[in-house]
Length: 64
Image (tube, rainbow, N blue to C red; front, side, top):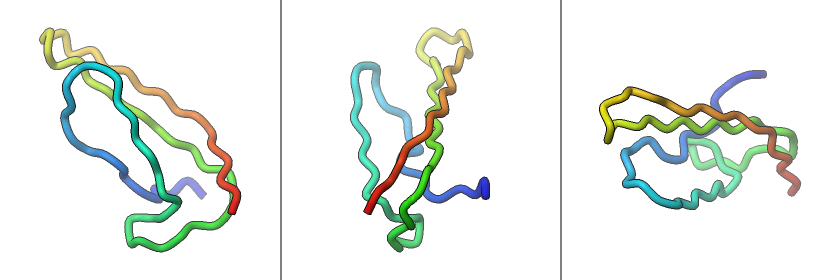
């Protein structure tokens, strides 16, 4: 429990709306089991120099 399954995106993106999809696979390309997963999103506002960050975690149900 509590292990990282996959990092989807770890890169800087410009401001605006972005869409990220998970294919239900781990970092090794293996399909993961049906279950509840927690995803975490973190953004940093580097453009203003304020150093503010936004972190949000939510539950997701993966059904195969």
